[in-house]
Image 1 (cartoon, rainbow, N blue to C red):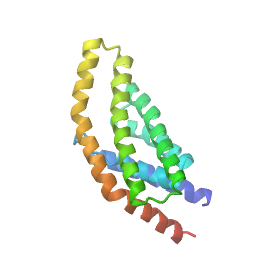
Image 2: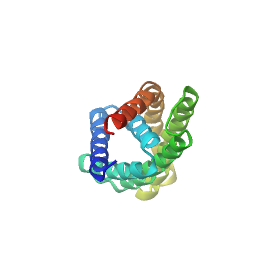
Image 3: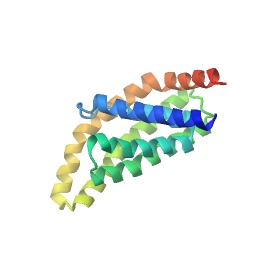
Length: 175
């Protein structure tokens, strides 16, 4: 792939992630970033996905504000997330059989839970919350985690393999 096409691919995908997050931002726990980023990393690998993850993490701040704890969370979580899915994609040669698809869904669910766990660690530490406030913060975050887990299962079940197929068709048409 030429450098120009690679830059365009990355730019369009970052825009898609931002658009997806903005479109669903009013509904707590409902998001498409997980399925979009997991499928991209699985198919396109770690290098491109790290660029997408970091660009997304920084650019989303222009829309939602530059909250330091969120920047730290996103710059830790999303590079880790795409590395995991990039490795899984490499392991399965970027093809998702039904068995691989189940593994992808299970790993994504664990990642959604990890995101909340990291947030529950980073935010109280950053803001210097006392123990009771940190527990209260963690407890309230559980109300967003359950819908995120359910929505991740649904979106990955429905859209992951079609997105991979779309990437493959696009690649073949650009040769």
